[in-house]
Image (cartoon, rainbow, N blue to C red; front, side, top):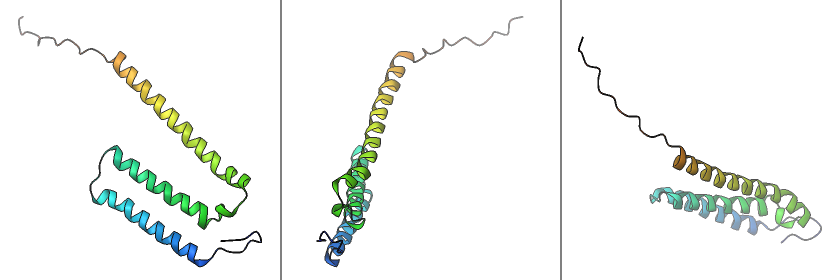
Length: 118
């Protein structure tokens, strides 16, 4: 581990992180390979991508060794943004559903073809 004087972490940590990133990338690829479909597919892909991003941010960008204030400064805005997007998506889905339920136009009555009587 790195100490307070800014010493670089050992190469072993980097090798372990790169190995774990390789495993997570393989797991992400296998979601498509094994034909997982629907919401489970997207949930697995998002979770695996977030795990990869977390490893990259924490170890490769040295955020795990920074002060807590800097960690909050970097991590809180994206978390808030994703939270607000999720709230907006939920509200949008609700609005769309209520509009579909209440404002679907009734089918127009079919009229007979005009007759050829003169």
